[in-house]
Length: 280
Image 1 (spheres, helix red, strand yellow):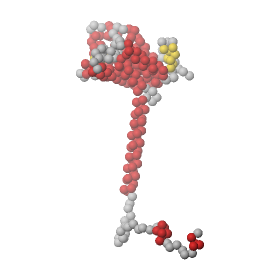
Image 2: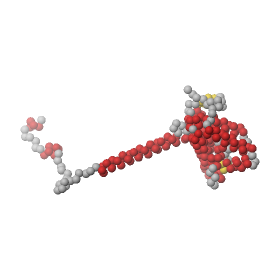
Image 3: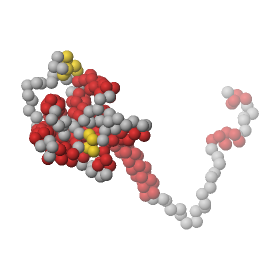
Image 4: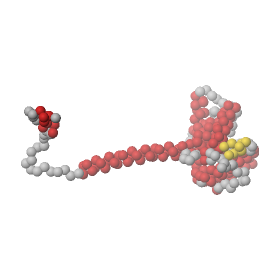
């Protein structure tokens, strides 16, 4: 029986509550003191490419708690997405894995965006669509979370735009299509479009039963164990051969030599009988 996303306010766990409160608190702090403390807070937390390349790597993580300053609608939509999809995933994974997953999505999204920007720069691109100098927002983490929810609940049903029922396994393609649409539209966002595609890859790699990463690791581990088992068997066989006692030759025994002979040699040297009846 198909399950549907429940809009009866499911209760999030402690980890998801921490994420929601942190994103909301940072947004309020930046909005209340936009020109003074808030501006400095956003500047210190955002992922600035030049600063990251000069060693300020914490920006790869902290940029995920920022939202567009003063954009209440964007803040509410991001919190709603984290809440709706994160509640189910947290219940299945646990809080620690959820936090690690979201942090990984933010970091991979920023790193991938910086790499794409560097490649685009070599190709002569200068626009902020592929070469943003400042990135902020949880969109990469939300994209990865949506993919993770769909991978963990492939037969669940979500009502697209609260009207159209869509199975989760097909909702993945809708999410990828949205990323492609943003890329084709060409309008810069608070994060690089490349970060959204990185979120899709993180969701596909780290979610599922089992996930692609875990399945790959299990195959590698199995191959290592098989190789180790074969090596141990060969070592045991060699040790048993070396430990087998050799019989000592008695004193005065002649040296070993190969003696030719056998039934074939006897029959070959035997003369046939003169009476032909014995030949039948």
